[in-house]
Image (cartoon, rainbow, N blue to C red; front, side, top):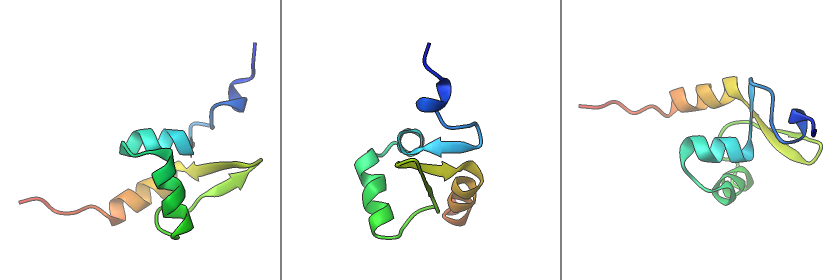
Amino acid sequence: MASPWRTRAPHDHLLQADLAERWRISARTLERLRWQRIGPPYLKVGGRVVYRLEDVLAYEADHLRGGG
């Protein structure tokens, strides 16, 4: 049986695919946002992009817009 750490991030981190699913955008869009230096901070670990959940939540809070 394969290790769950090979395909999944720890609970306090999101892989690029996880964040793309969370925001309902493509992984390619996230790559473009990183290239443009837009979006939450990320880590590059073993060739993978990993987002800390606390950074994603802070980014979302900073971009929250009020309703009517």
